[in-house]
Image (tube, rainbow, N blue to C red):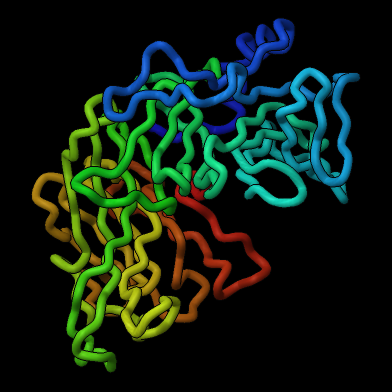
Length: 348
């Protein structure tokens, strides 16, 4: 599994600490004394910023679409209604990242199969939302991670729900929510969307316009140093895109790449997936060069992703066997509405 951590393994690892928190009536994910030097843990959050054990609690109720807790009136996560119970479901809890609205606070939320709140941490900002909420591994221990779009920061909480790191994109860029992956080397891999002035006449657009490129950054979690920065326009031309000027963008520019996911292959090089080129790229982690392309245009492999096929416009890709040539390309919800699109974490 590598750095991938299933919900079952995470919950098994934190079971003892969760019992302690429940009995002590305390809340987790507080700012820890030890925090990343890349971005100090914030101190403008409540003293107990948000762990709630609701199952079996007489002091909690779900009203008007949101939970209310007598012991924590400042917390109101949205209620989750289970309309149909299923049998033989996978073990573990369900990770959600609701957006703030009339139904309750936004933040990072874990519920059980009954919809009961297991743990909740509200957003610290009054705007934005939590994205890419999942369990990962950092320094050999299970952690919870997510990205906060309001601040553009990436958050790591340890197995006791305390915040241990908060990082952001480097070199003046603003991070994007599509991917926050902790690598086997305990570095952070993140996605960035960057507008660059570009002549789009070759793809049917205006001469003076912009192209949105994808940037991959690898960041030292402890120091915030950028270890690798890969830019799509340095390696992938506009002519490789199926996107059109003015499509999915609030201007005459072009979102030509649309970086969706990052993963680490078995040889420690990177696999990235781009929606608008319908392609997967293997990137040399040392030089940034493209080792191979798997895609509908300019493919360098025997296979191709055909536009409008079940695997095209795929949101994620990851290695599945001890062979660098074995990968999984999950189906896309864009071409098959009956199937849920998978992120790299779920597809692995």
